[in-house]
Image 1 (cartoon, helix red, strand yellow):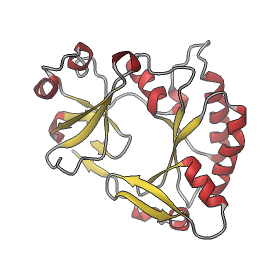
Image 2: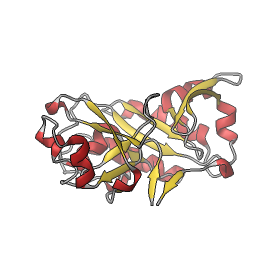
Image 3: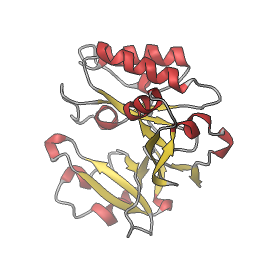
Length: 228
């Protein structure tokens, strides 16, 4: 089963990849599927109505471009690696390792399994150099309003940022797949009144929603897009 939602990783069959990237000028791109490196699901452009919209972010050494592709569903398989923050293979001298350890301790307190995204994830799953000392630390926090105190999580994340050497970025993602940048959500939740925030999802696109609706949304409304 292939899960199609923002941030989901998939791999592409080599034959289908040759159809869309076989003449790309960069060998790294041409060989991407053969090396079993993943692509990431993205929101399709208005004129993209055939196939699954995927992105391939290149590392700085290859131009730091995000290449868009459209692939047929039957050419995709789930990525067999892990995006869990706890599963990242950190060398003892990795400069980001102490920050990740602090975030994992916070995650345990909130009973959440955070996921890596951005440069941290792509370096882990490809072995290419995406991270630098000035990179953001991009983390996904999937919450269930029935089980988690989202406001408390946001307060703890904000308090922890002063103890991190890297800038913490990323999203809080709710059961209906709406994702909100965590700092925006924290700032809005801290103000009086029913503030609105920018939420993104494949199903709903980009929209303004109230913090209250996110914090109280019924988990039964979650419908991830699946395909066999």
